[in-house]
Image (tube, rainbow, N blue to C red; front, side):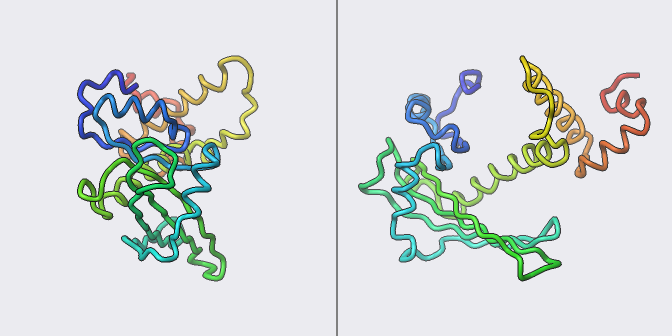
Length: 209
């Protein structure tokens, strides 16, 4: 996909844990791009190294308090410059993001999630607010697409599992979500019900008359 983009110099690429790979980092370095990568269990050694850093001694660099979807979420971000001890090429800073979610209708119920990330950006190249904004932007894209596919379309329980069926259905779901988003839809579930009641509405959405 990135081969199709001409100039990547000084572009900041965010990616989830699937792309936290040494060959992917080497490719970005060759193209002159910067990166922020989420680190999860697929890189257990690196994840352990990041979790073992002295985060308790590090003050919060940013804090954001959001409300929506019937819940309140507080996100804090801590950042450490990496000098030694992290076994990953070009890594310059480590990031810890803690997300604490609380339901507005039941304040006693809450969850806390801690996520780690690494970046090749040096301190002078990106301020904490910028790093936090890039991470939030990446999660926003994931939430708008993957959450809708998982929850609204109940993709994980699909009975289509053979051949290329799953890939075809995923492409069709993405196309449907994209068409609705381009039409200004913010509630995909409600839009699905609206279009299901009259097939001509779907044709209109697709520009077919």
